[in-house]
Amino acid sequence: MMAIRELKVCLLGDTGVGKSSIVCRFVQDHFDHNISPTIGASFMTKTVPCGNELHKFLIWDTAGQERFHSLAPMYYRGSAAAVIVYDITKQDSFHTLKKWVKELKEHGPENIVMAIAGNKCDLSDIREVPMKDAKEYAESIGAIVVETSAKNAVNIEELFQGISRQIPPLDPHENGNNGAIKLGKQTSQTGRRCC
Ligand SMILES: Nc1nc2c(ncn2[C@@H]2O[C@H](COP(=O)(O)OP(=O)(O)OP(=O)(O)O)[C@@H](O)[C@H]2O)c(=O)[nH]1
Picture 1 (cartoon, rainbow, N blue to C red):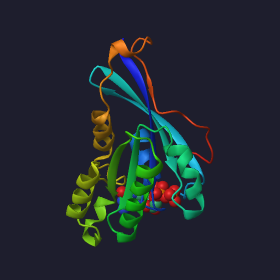
Picture 2 (picture 1 turned 90 degrees about the vertical axis):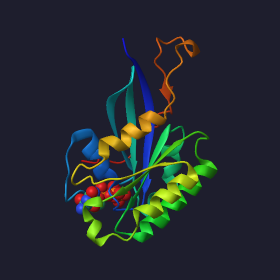
Picture 3 (picture 1 turned 180 degrees about the vertical axis):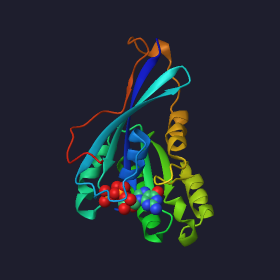
């Protein structure tokens, strides 16, 4: 039997960058042009194979609006990974991403895997953030980086596969639970579903 590992993952980033859309594309393979802003946070799960294990992502999609900022620690606390999203057509959103990284480094879990997603790459004709800037920044902080389009389903699976690859394989001798462990803790749910 394959071991199932539960991985708490949170999404952080400015309002409107496409966090909920990325989650909807990953979990439901669906895109909604008229998706409304997240209130509080929403929760979804998806299980994917990774080598000899199954990774069950417990995904907390946080609200990007400033008024919800103080809730974020509930979602990144105990997370195995954070997906920090910016919009390639908005330089400001890249600036906000850097603020999230700083907060995670100061207050987040010590070994949290950081994955940067430059979303809306289908709009590269109106791009404001060069891929090179994102790559250099990601390298400087030891994060994964990928440009995504939730709209066109570009690099969404790859984003989560990248996270899976950063999670060290289970040592079966380290726990007595048939190899199944939890990485990150689940917290109580607030807000609405994302789609
Ligand atoms: N062109 C394009 N539009 C996108 C993409 N992803 C999301 N959008 C649009 O961007 C807008 C915001 O998307 P959301 O997923 O609600 O953004 P969010 O980051 O979750 O926003 P908050 O919930 O306020 O934090 C919506 O109109 C989406 O349809 C994408 O990959 N390409």
